[in-house]
Image 1 (tube, helix red, strand yellow):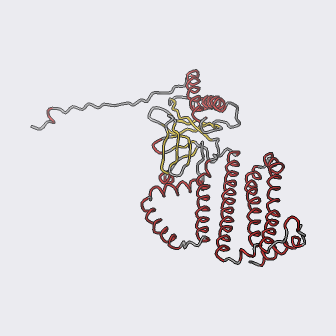
Image 2: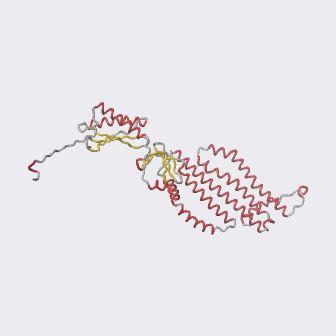
Image 3: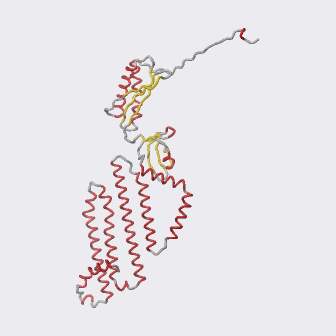
Length: 384
């Protein structure tokens, strides 16, 4: 028996030995019976507070946590209920058994009971740790959702962390049970190499998904522009695939390792607001200043219509080049969200076409002038 257990048992036995057991009820008690009575009092000293704590939690502390405005308190304190109540129960069982001196004299029984109680403590620690980790990830997910970020970005990390805790806890339980885990670890290392080679592509996708969740270059709901001019919204970053919903409502499944190596444009980063532009060409004999004023007015109307409100951003024109049949320019606008850029371009094209037509500004068709040169050789120049 350890020094701490001995001191605690002595502290508990002091009031018990002062108890005068009624002779009419119990008669003369044997030493073993006296140990059982002391063990019963020790159990009561721990189990009654455990029951009172559960009642206190259910009636007072639990409702207060549920009403708390801080979600961190609710998610991180809930695992404490099981830890405290079951900790008191296991502590009472441990100390009660240590008080049975006749049982301690049986080495085999004592060893198995001690191992069983220790395993119960390890199981309780695993449960508490996994619940605490789950609460931490849920808090991060709720915080991300409040900031407009996706809730599923921590799913992979949470599962990996929980799995690692359970695996290490199971190995520790086997060691407590007297199982030699050295061959298991050695065989697991060899098996891990074999499985790693067999599942190389799958594992690369899994780790790529883990890095995507850690680095977070994308989130659910982001509008991406991928290769081959494909665009779509991120629906999920899973273990193996990143799912993107394209504009035609089909689902594009991209392996995580390929997605991590690809180049894409995220229209939602670093801000949901972005600039968009429409390119147009006008005839060479046009008044460029007048064209610029009309184009800016049309872009302003389109920008306000796409954003459903007026914005402080002023559209502007930048002349691009002298084309084959027109002077090319771009008019720039700003929208509040990525999907609004297509509405802005749509409204701007219609508005510029209407206003240019009303102002007599010509948008020329592509024209190409071909010059044919006919040369005829005289008969004298022909070889004889």
